[in-house]
Image (cartoon, rainbow over all chains, first blue to last red; front, side, top):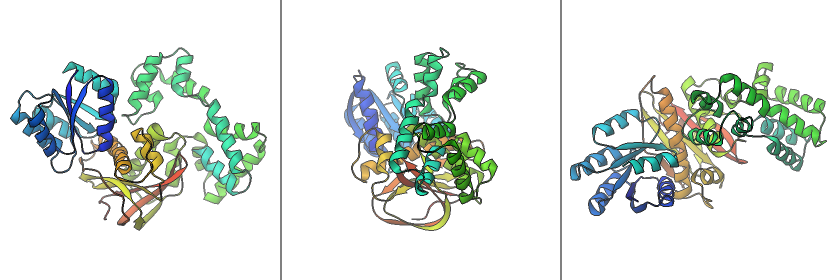
Length: 117
Length: 293
């Protein structure tokens, strides 16, 4: 079981993701609505795994990834995005993202990725 | 889609009542079997393979048969045979109308001819309608003077609606408009070499069936939660569209936006009315520029 932080500006996405993770026995310790809030929650809570949406207002997922990795270079971060963001995925890999999941969420895929981490 | 287009026409012309039409749809639903189920029952695929493709369809802009072929589960010939077993939607509609003793085959055929004339469709258009394929039907309802990319953007939205929300959606004639007054909206813009926006709006509570089906929860009001769900649906459509056009030009998806307040849109917009679970919504799209609010 992992302690997970969900960072996504969409309430719908947060709710769907939380449901999938909790059903599989993981603990969602907090949610954040943008990258800035996500970085602060990461520093405060030190989750085992963080899911980070890429396209968000205030601070996007790529910037938040860099700040999280500056604070903790072993942070396990799963980038979440709709399809069609290949260039940003490449940038996220360079900046230390561990994995990717695509919206809409595919339950088995997400759980497999978290187990692997 | 043809069953709802022709069905609505038959009701409008007084050939069928609303109740009779609903009976026809119920009859069709009882006999229409999903392709995956047919493939499993024909022992061409396992239940696990069928379930896997159903899951993949949520994130891929592809039909069940196409994914099955890509995965090596079925051959093209097997898909063709299974589609034959599944049946043509127009013929299923005619059969359901006739089996319920509402109209004869001749009367339905005559009604289709009248529908063709009323809408200015050619014989080729009618063949497209009878095919039951959304990619052939929807372009008949789009204005002529839109770009190939804008057409593809709308078709992507239609295919995603069919796969994720409602397999029985249908459309009305789309128009080009330069001014819209909306009660509310959800939208997402694409920046880059070609700017574009895809918005969804509706009157009253008409977007709620879409919002509820996508989020998997029942919404009672058009508010931040239900509009957020519609935004996420648009995000999925735009993601698949961006993937498709990626080799031609670069796109950057901007954060989705919504408003539950009345708003005016300006700029050259394509407006396509779509019936989702019986509720009329509007797909509003621009290509070459963003929607102006």
